[in-house]
Amino acid sequence: MRLRLDLAYDGTDFAGWGIQPNLRTVQGVVEDALATILRLSQPARLVVAGRTDAGVHASGQVAHIDLPTLASFENPDGSLDLQEFENRLAGILKRDPDVVLKRASIALDGFDARFSPLARRYEYRLQDDARTYNPLERHRSVWTPKPLDVDLMNAAAESFLGLRDFGAFCRPRPGATTIRELQQFEWRREPDGVVVCHIQADAFCHSMVRSLVGACVVAGNGKAQQSELDEVRDGAQRTALFKVMPPHGLNLVEIIYPADDELGPRAELTRSRRDLLDDEAIA
Image (cartoon, rainbow, N blue to C red; front, side, top):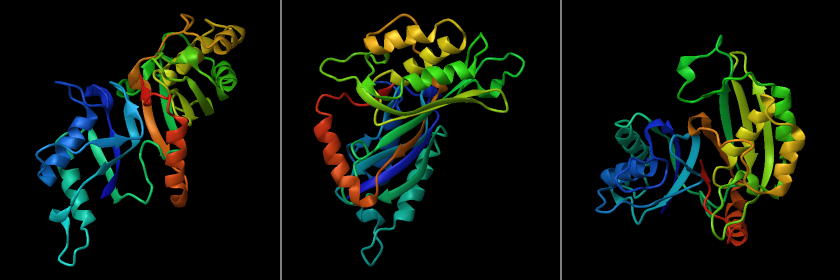
């Protein structure tokens, strides 16, 4: 049986999503909780929509897990007491208050958390005004010492949209492509002064979001001209013109899936197209 888990977490005290020896990870915490309620001798492995790196948050993460049986949660008539399963898993996770189970459900036919998505959506938060700086934001927003021009940042963001080689914004991995389709990228200043970007793509390669944010920051604070960013973009090579921004300003907001009857075909299509793609990881 395949289950879908919708999760949220504060990434501050995690070494990222994926299992790592002797480190606390989101995957490790959730798999240990599953092993406890299902009395598994070995954890069942989760498949995740987007592997987040150390310090990155998620309010809309999705994972799936394949289990041989859920006999301990069956009703007398043989039906599954999914509410009890959800309550038990959520209860175990509350021991780690930085991970929350939002929902557990039986996965629809063809559903694959990693390969079925049409897109992933993130946000990144910045503070640039000492007069309005909010210390309660410090774990989910990044301080920039120079004031930012949001109009210049939006001009830069718009120039990156479309299907292109994002080699200038991705940490290279052997045998992996850096071609992605950036579908949305825009900035706005909130009433409290926080500058927030909303960014969406079919998938993101390693460090892509934080690098694109870094490019917009140097545009917004006047350290780089648009012509320089255009040259870097078209050259598709790593550059020292901007830096990869810190992880704690980044939040995975939503995984966008197709209609129910298109989940399986979408997964097959993605697998065939991503033979050379690395697993998504946001740094």
